Length: 238
Ligand code: FES
Image 1 (spheres, protein in one colour):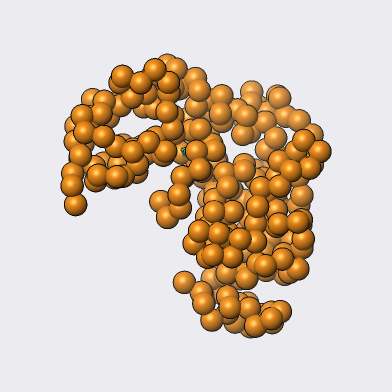
Image 2: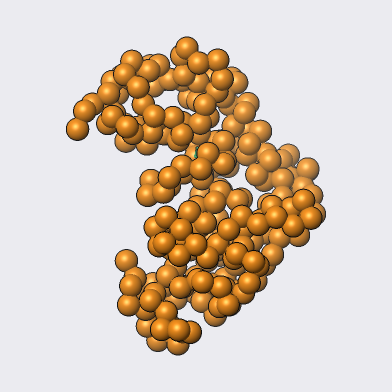
C-alpha cells in the first residue's frame, strides 16, 4: 500500500494513496467537522462542513471529495473556511426543530455534537427558522421524524450502496427537497427490507428504530416481527 506524505495544519502526516483527505486527517487524529460523510459510503459532498483550503488551489474544497496528493499542504481552520462552515451549519439549522430535548437522539446526535464543537448558539441561528413541512411518519419498525432530517443523504446511500435495495431517494415537491421512499410510499409498501441500515447511519433523530427493535437484545427482535414477502432482512442482517 503506497503511502502519501502531506501536511495538515502544520502537522506532517502519512496517508494511503487514493484515500480521501477527510479520512486521512481523521486517521491521523486531526478532526475536520463533517456530517454527510460516512467511511463505508461514497462521499456525497452535500453538507459542505468538511471544507478546507489546499495550497495552490484558488477555491475551498470539500475534504471528503478530495483525494490526497504527495506534498499537499492543507489548512482546516482559516477565516474563510470557518465562515463557510458556519454558513453551511446555519442553513442546515434554519429548518431544524428547536425541541432537541424531546428528541430520542438527544445527547446522541451528531448534529448536536457538531454544534457544541463549533460553539454555535441555537437561538441566533434559528432566528431564520422557516415553516417546516417535511414528512413525519412512523410504522411498526422505523420511526421517521423527517423534520429532523438534515438531508445528508447517508440513508439513501446506505440503502443503495450497502444493502443494494434503493428504497429511499431525495424527492422534490413544491420547491421542497426531502428524503422519503421512492414515490412517497409508506415504508411497508416500498421496497424497504427493514434491515435498519438507514437507522444505523442517520446522524440525527430523523430515522430511528422503534425502541431498540433492531437491537439484538431487544425483546421485540426483528425475527419476531411478521413481514411481507419473506423479507430477506430476517435472514440477511449484517
Ligand atoms: Fe464532506 Fe459533508 S462531510 S461535504
